[in-house]
Image (cartoon, rainbow, N blue to C red; front, side, top):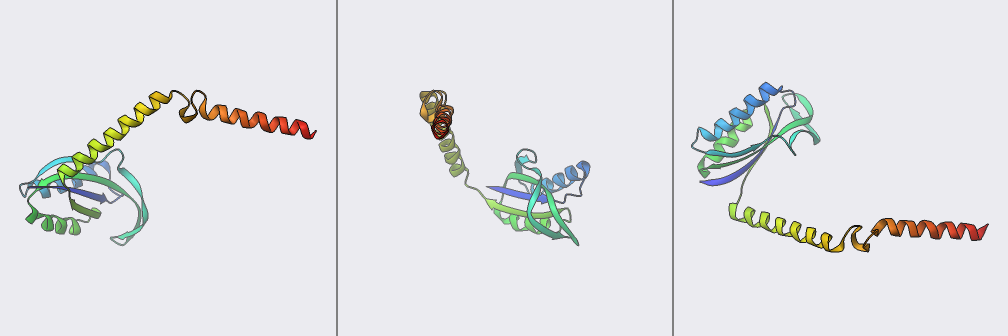
Length: 156
């Protein structure tokens, strides 16, 4: 089995009950073919979002949609069948399925965590105020304000 990522945009006209039913239906497409849903993320940062452009769907111009991100394991031969089923499902506005490399994703996650740890250590070393040391930007802003005030006094 291979790991896949599928982003699905559901119609904004669905109420919570219908949306949950649509999500269950899409999950059923995978599980009925021997696959396993690893994760289905419909909340942060997804959920209902504004589309980048208007999409014509079932005779309506849609500007919003419910984004749901699925991760699942499935045999490769069933992916085209699932894409076909998503294409004829009237509640699905758009979808995209990609195969992901689990090892590569794990390496990227580890690298991201390492960068965050290095950044936190660097900020701790610098102390409050960022690059300029204690006070940092506030100190620079105060210095500029004082310089401008002194220059204005000299003009008067």
